[in-house]
Image 1 (cartoon, rainbow, N blue to C red):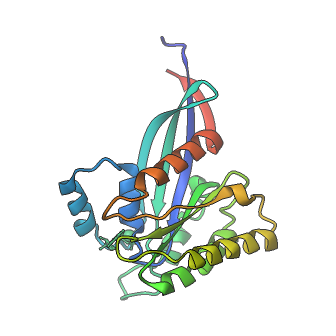
Image 2 (image 1 turned 90 degrees about the horizontal axis):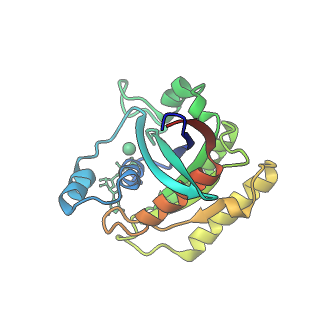
Length: 220
Ligand SMILES: Nc1nc2c(ncn2[C@@H]2O[C@H](COP(=O)(O)OP(=O)(O)O)[C@@H](O)[C@H]2O)c(=O)[nH]1
Ligand SMILES: [Mg+2]
C-alpha cells in the first residue's frame, strides 16, 4: 500500500586501529557474515592495503517495540597508517581532513576499537585512537564503543589486557565527561579466519543501531 509507513534506523560505524589489525576484512565480514569458504579465502587474501576511505553498507529489518525497522549500517573504514609510507600515499589524518564535515561522521553510532592480539603495540595504540575519536567529538549519547581483540586464531587474548584497555576507556569517559556509561562499552573477541565473534559483532551493532541509531519514517 502506498501510504504504509516504513521505519528506518541508520548509523555510522567506524573501525579504528593500527594498520593490518583487520579493519577492512572485519568490516567486510560483518556486512556479510555468511560467506562460503571460497569467498572467505578471497576476502582474506585479496583485501588490499588501502590509502583511501572504504565505505560499506548493509541493511536488515529488525523488530523494535513490535515494529519492523529497516536498519542500515554505514561503515567508514579509514586507512590505519598515521605516517606517510611514500610521497604518494595518504595517511589517516589526510583522509579524515577531507571527510571531516561529512554528516555521517558528526554522530558515530558505533566505534570499533580493533587490535591484533598477536601484536601488543596495536593494543597500546588504542589509547591514541580513542583520544582521536574524543577530539573529533564522535562520541555522543548514543555511541557504542566495542573493543575487538582480533586474530584470536593466532593467539588467545589475555583477559588482563582486555580489562586494562576497558578501564582506560572508563577513565577517558570520566575525564572527558562523555555522555555515555558502562552499558555503552562491550568487548567481543574475533577471528576473520575461523569467523569466531563475527555474527555476534554484527548482531550487537545491528541491534544497537536499530534501537539507538538515527530514526526516520518514510512511505513504503
Ligand atoms: N590470522 C588472521 N589474519 C587476519 C585476521 N583478520 C585479518 N587478517 C589478515 O590481516 C591482514 C590485514 O587485514 P586488513 O583488514 O587489511 O587490515 P587493516 O589494515 O586494519 O584494514 C590481512 O592479511 C588479513 O588477511 C584474523 O582474524 N586472523
Ligand atoms: Mg584496510
